[in-house]
Image (cartoon, rainbow, N blue to C red):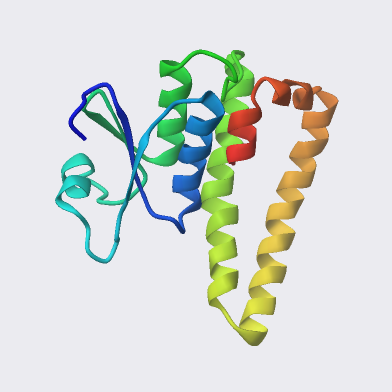
Length: 164
């Protein structure tokens, strides 16, 4: 990690948050160095670049670190403006996309982890409870999205949409 202009990603193979950063860089054609982290034995570099949360992913660009996958995606979109864009130009649509990305991270991702970690009847109860609530929200919003022709924009925002 000697060159200041290089892009470095600290991650772990099992993290979907890390994979979304790697996918964004690949979509944009940005070369990067990948450093696999052992989260049970965090490296000094990880602790240096993310002293607050002490977790991955971390993107280091020009010697400066960015943490949190959705923040990293916005940084990539802002820093490398060439196609494909990860976010739409329209502020309203960009805000809606951020909302649903956040919804996924805070509700669906957490919920699926709860389902995976539970067993038997507890798993069935978790699945029913979470599925009904989350799917109801997604169905309502997806109807509005289709009506607003939002999916037409996915050609331009392919990266961020697929990275949810």
